[in-house]
Length: 90
Image 1: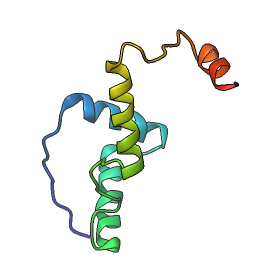
Image 2: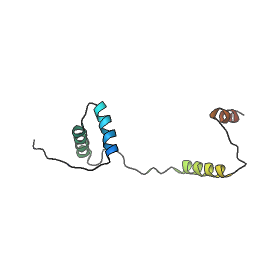
Image 3: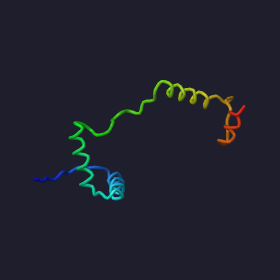
């Protein structure tokens, strides 16, 4: 099998974090990148889902409700999870 060099640029912190994970898995960077490339070939695309983190309608509505409550000075406030749980156990 003929080999070739592949030069890429990435943030040093990203590289270091990835190397740490790969080392724990018993892999070096070259092996990990080759696994990715072979999987991309086998899958005929990126071997994981690429998507925007867009909340569904229910979650988006809950976020908006939360924002409104935070702006409302008369909305109840809780200093701990225990206090919130106590208020919910009515």
